[in-house]
Image (cartoon, rainbow, N blue to C red; front, side):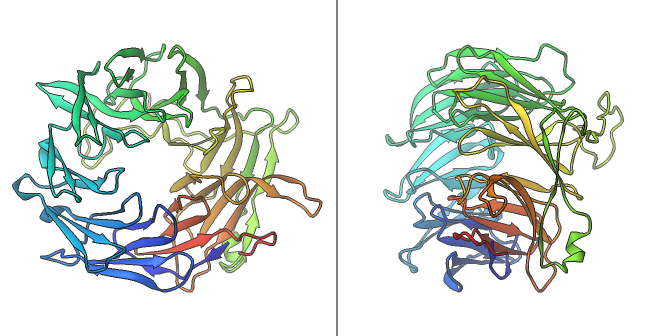
Length: 477
């Protein structure tokens, strides 16, 4: 991989443009845009963050067509918009007395969705016509809404007269309300719109394990609750890229998979200490960073579970019941359950991390339609330090699918399912640890893939650098 020099950043505001050709970052009250394929600054703007430049814009984002950038200063209730084509052109949105908690782009790249404080309303501002459309009583300002993939509909969870409601709005028609119906929930936690845009999964807050599936017309298609009793509710919900399966993770040690044919349970993934036969385990070499003086790269140690070589992992046992004594600054949720789930672009790999195993990342084989539907654990990646972030590439990388991990050290860890293993051309999966070559100490706490899957942003507390795959046969690090 090729690495850039580290650059300063504030509050973790660093993003690839949708086309991957630019990198947006914030340094206090200044926006900086760099080209990802060459050194130097392409454009820069100053954002009014008074009364203090240290209260930098809390949220910045590219428009889907990469032509505009918005910067939100929530404390002042202001959204600033800048143009990549015309450096002198700017726009400004002031929320007024209703306040502002969040703003983001609509799929058309010419409308901005603003969420007011206290859940009062959502305002859709059009840059083309300089008009505003208002939607009353959103349930949440940071979740519970989604755009359909084609940008036709905006789906919003709302709260009307103490009831959970779902509003469906036609975006090309000026966000005209086309459907408005009650949801089969008492305290909605969030929603997940299927990739096909036909179904919406809604689920209760953490006190109850209940997931309901509705369509955009308002029909209640099914409700799922586990057969066994659970102490807490749903923690993670994602859709398979095809929209054929709904994946539900709770605070227990199970992941439930529903099929969209009859919305019934077709498989369950359970976290167990003994690994199934055939599972590949990759272990990080001990003290490799100090042995290579922070400049090297090494493969992980590979072991395959078999009858003669059984593999067992350590799983911390969650508390049997929720604590009954309130402790200041204590988390109300137990240290258990699935913390993240991601599918590969093809939908054949599922990446998951579990609270009980903080140093492990699990990769499951998710069968394609031509194979019997039996999801199985394929690979475990074991690091020496707790994993702070694990991300699957959005698109196939130069060779196969890649998973990037970080643990707060000066390295990034890469797993790939289609690497050349020897000079004979044999290909297979490989896990490597790669030191980040910087002069100053760099602790990678977050990784972010570029949209095309060929680049990574590596994040420290106050700095970042980018890494890109080398598109030739002889890779360098």
